[in-house]
Length: 205
Image 1 (tube, rainbow, N blue to C red):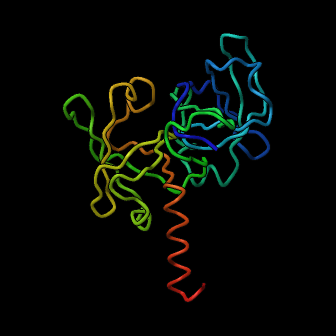
Image 2: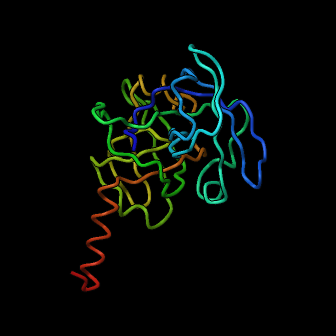
């Protein structure tokens, strides 16, 4: 489980095929000694498992593997060496819940359709695949590339968010432009509410 609060902006160092998977090496400021093999790390909104690591106390690298489902349902196939990746370590019991509950299970790919300055922030407008818009509500939460954000408005399959300067500086939103695709995770509560309402509509108690 994660919170959508990015704790490091990593860099994709290499991509290699491995047993039908893609093995990704990500450079980060996380001390190698603090990363346990098998630990979950949120990488651009995708919960991935550390399978190798290296480096010292001031940072190093870790490797993860992406299987067929991840390659088909996320933006991983578009990642190129040098790409900046939003990173977050798994939530520990007692940690501050600064964003919202994020699982790292991507629901779809959102596309940036507009970016424009708005006062001291930047307004982004996203378009989501048809069917996902019903899970997105004004003042509700979404995770985009692993960043916890509050929805400002919804219009059909499009919704807007405002990104403050701190978030622009500390995540990949700083370089994000129209046409770019991001991993979208809908709010965990919205998912289960929709499921329950659907069950009631079908006569299931």
